[in-house]
Length: 200
Image 1 (spheres, rainbow, N blue to C red):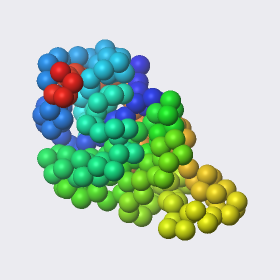
Image 2: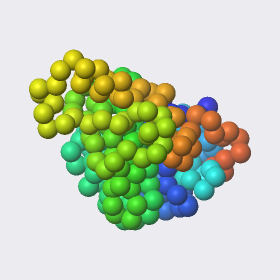
Image 3: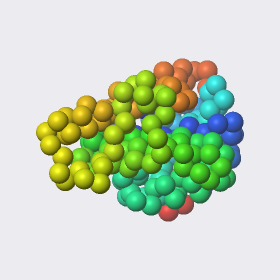
Image 4: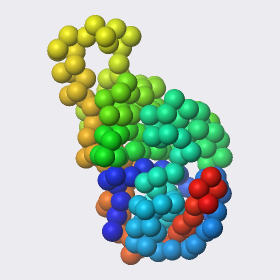
């Protein structure tokens, strides 16, 4: 069982599960294999898997970020920047079809280099310039310009054409780091499951 739909996750470069769990302040920790940890994190808590190709993945459908609706929260860039101060290079993905939240972000050493997110039709998060991977996928290329209230039909058509869906988030993840749906959990070392302190 993999993950990637109806959840949020982090990809952290060259950090151990223990380092990631510490940065996320996970309590009540258990050492679990990929399948069990993934399954439980869809219900509550966060699972930090063993490293895969130099990336440590952490996912949780609820509670990965201490914010409302994750990347749609205006405090999100500050949270991600602070987390990357501790962890170095990190990527964040949200792929929740229930309320149509789709997005991604990339931060290194306290600087958010790129962030894009849509949330149920609200004005998206749009920081930095689209990366080559986004250009390749053709999604996340447009934010709301200052004059968006004056947009004509063709402007909205162009915006919606570049708005991602749940499959696009996974395509982008595969280009930035890896697609968690394609990870063979049988070859991943057991990871850490725990509850964020605010939930424990």
